[in-house]
Length: 188
Image 1 (cartoon, rainbow, N blue to C red):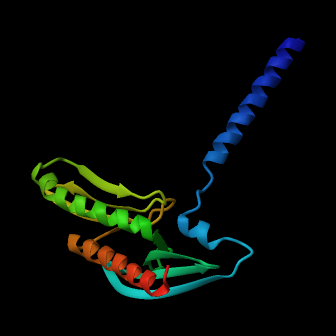
Image 2: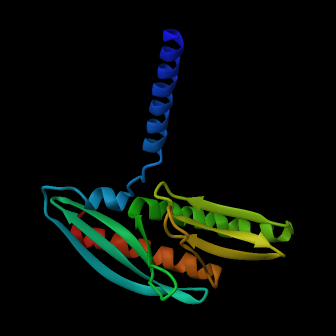
């Protein structure tokens, strides 16, 4: 009887340990913006520069550059915000500069692929790029038509559809140029 009780106790403890590890893995990961801006014990200054809105289906995204100055360090983020409406909460993507550079490279590749993907006439095809923070840019092809989208946040239903492919190209390239201009003027 003692052996059965010990085996049962060992199995219960093992199951609890496995469950605790799984729960830890499911915890929300901090984005680069959250990591940089949440440091304690230092003064953190936020400076926003507004950029033109990005047209999306049924609305527009407000865009801009947010500079975070923390001590002697600066970080630059491209901010895309879907404003709050009566039917939904606001969604915000904060794309760190190095991710923005990679996104622009990926968008160039996606633009180069889209015509061939549409010509292949698939029932469904999706081609996308995803950052470590969960931001996605891409398109899906259905009924010989490409539909471009952005997913702003990892943990929510924050997908917006773009009206034109060129809008995403222009907006992201303009954001990169603006950050490079700000970096040069701030000396960092």
